[in-house]
Length: 301
Length: 215
Image (cartoon, rainbow over all chains, first blue to last red; front, side):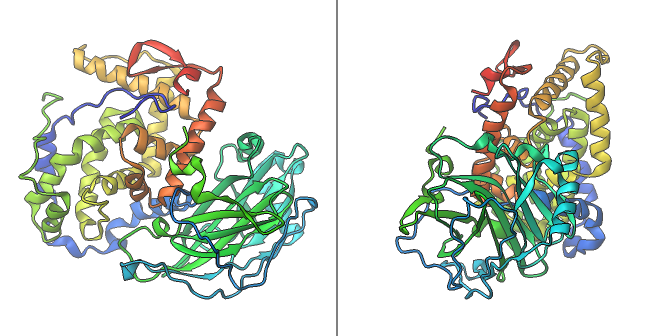
C-alpha cells in the first residue's frame, strides 16, 4: 500500500480477530446445496442497496492508453454538431444518431460483444430544465443557465438525460435527470466547474456514468468542456473505433450511448465499453485523443 | 480471545482462487474456507478503513463471506483473484442504510469527542481505539471527495488493488478508475491546501499538513 500517492495513509493493517472462530461459524452456516440461490430471495435487501450504489458508481469517463483510430469511422448519422462555444445559449441540442449500425467489439470472447444501438438525444423543455436545475442545485440554481439539456436514447433506473449548465463565471455543473428531477455526482453539485480546467487544455471532463437500462441494455452518458479551437468532439466505445458525434454547446459537450450488452453476464459491461473522447479542429485534424492523454495513461503524476 | 489469532496465511498448495472457487461452486466448503483464510484479513482491513470501526469490520467481514458463498456461482474473478469481487461485496454491504447510520453515529461520536474509554486498557485494545481515531481523521480529510472517488482511493491506494482489480470491484471501466483517482488527487489537493492537519500511519506521532500528504 502506498500512502504517498497524494492521499493520507490509514493505520496499518491488523489481523482479523477470532479468525478461526469466524471461519468455523461461517462453514457451519453455509449450505452446500444452496448454490441455486434465488437472487430476489437471498439478496433482496443487499441488492436493493447495491443497485443504488451501482447507479452512482458505474461510470465511464476516462480512459487510458490503447489503440487509436488512424482513420476514425464516424457514425453514419450525418450529425456534426460543430462548435457552439460562441453561442452559449441554453438551446438544448439534439444530435440524432438514430439507429446507429450495431458495432461489435473485436474480441476473441464472443460473449463480450456489444453494440451501440443509439446515440440519439432529444431536447428537454425549458420548464423541465428549470425544475431539474432547481432540484439538482438547490439555492444555487438561479445562478446557472443550461447550455445542454437532452434526454438520453434510453432510460435507466436512475437517469434519462442530463443538463449541463454554466454560471456567469464560466463554472459548469452537470446534473443527471430522471423526469423533472436532477441529481449530481458531485458534492456539492456545483463542484464541477472550472477548477479542473488548466491552461493549455483542450478537453476536460466532468462526470461520466452508466448503468443497466433493462435486460441486455446499458446506458452510458458523460460530459465535459472544451477549448475554443475544438470544432468537433466524438466518442468511441471500447475497442470499437467507430466514433459518434457528441452534443456541443456553450463550451460544453455531452455524449451518450445506448448499448445492447450481448450475452456476457460474467464481466461488468462498463469494463469493455469505456468511452474515448476525440476532438478535432476546424480542418478536421484530430487534436485530442483521450487514449493518448497522459492523465489517463498512467504517464502523468 | 487473542485479537491476532489469524488463521493460516501460507499458500494453499499453490491452488489459485479460481481453482478453489470452482470447487466452492460445486459445494466444497473447505475450498471456500481456504478462500476465507486467504482474503479475510484484507476484507477486514478494507472494511475498517471504510468504517473506522474494528468491531463493525469484523462483523461485516463474516457477512461478506456469507454473501459470497451464496453468490458464488456468479462470482467475477479478476484474473485469478476473488479479492476484488469480495471487496465489491463489502462495499455494497456497507451501503446498507442501517449500517451507514450506525457508522455515522459512531463517527460523529468520535469526531465530537476523542475521549472514548479504552476498556481494560490492554495495549492492543488501546491501539485499536487509536486506529479508529486516526481513521476518523483520515475520513475527515477525504470527506469532501465524492463517494465514487473515495471508493477508488480506498481500493487502489489503501487496499492495494491495481486499477483493473478496482474496476472489477466497482463494476466500472478501468479508465473510469484512472480518471476517478486522478480527479480525487486533484480535488484533495484543492480541498486540503491550507486545511486541517492529518496524521499518517508512516508518522503517526508527527502529523503533517494536509497539503504535504496531498503532494
